[in-house]
Image 1 (cartoon, rainbow, N blue to C red):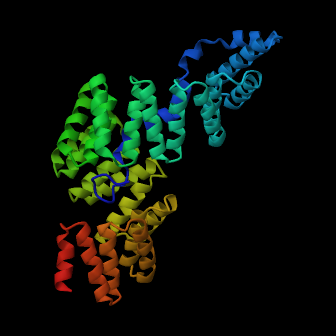
Image 2 (cartoon, helix red, strand yellow; image 1 turned 90 degrees about the vertical axis):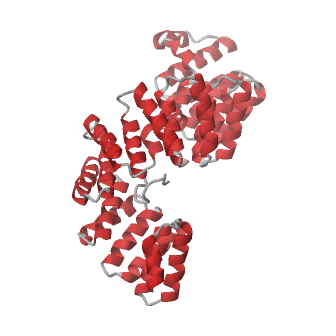
Image 3 (cartoon, rainbow, N blue to C red; image 1 turned 45 degrees about the vertical axis):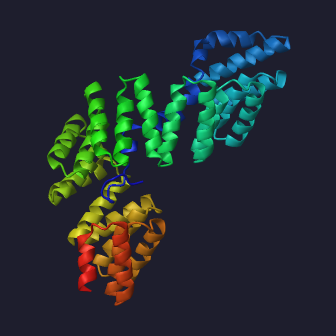
Length: 410
């Protein structure tokens, strides 16, 4: 997903700071939603279980207690078995079905989880937790419309649920409904104006909307609340870079480097910054540092390889770099285009065409891919097809003077 930035900078800023619900809640919400249960003592619970209670109610309570203990010990499979035993003894307790569903979700059995949640909703239509967990499941399946409907139901049942509101905002981000997401984050900030994370997320969303002034304002507020907020410095640097305010871009990214000299993301964005100010030697150094610190950093391989191709230097290395990026993310249209462009620069036109045509299928509205395809057609002597692709490139990005010159001169 590309934000506002150069097509080569593919790492979305959302990944830097964590959209509150999607990045954090998917990992912790299922456990934390039952935080009141954490007061159970493992020793005391096992003592209750060891007494082998004789009545169905007592046996049910013993299994339920053991399920909670196993959940707190992160022994999810054992917890699920205990809750299954509770349901055999007493199938009409809604919150046991909900807990079992949460464990099934953690165990990646979403079909069973959804079945249990359906039962829980029928048993207690006023409990918001089943809808919340259902929304998490739908989000994990990329069923964002269904997830959004469940979060709306949570807010109907529990109007003060900050988690549901922020989760709905995150769903809107995943659906590229940035204005709706921004509206929700503004409401969240009204409830909690001291949250650096809320301001950070709002700043990223505004940057995605092209409202860089508001993005800078929100990110600056996040830094004021938390002067050590690394991701906010990086994000500010990138936004200033988009605005071609390279002085402020450099200040923020260099501050991030002081704070985290071994963070590969910092080196990646510094590499992009230096490339934009035409210091490709420094850019290459930082891209290499990013790769050294994270050998699976596909964007860094791609950017460095593409930069070499654009400069017509180190083409053998550029080929290896872009091949590595594609190996890490085979379906990335931008990476396939970079590989094709390196091959074109090496004179391997037929191979280049194959990769760039595949890139175009993945990203049909990308002006750079269209331009590259036109260049290949022109090299093959297919002038009309070349002009057609260059014209389409201008439709998607009318500011490309280089492409206009190609159309005039050829």
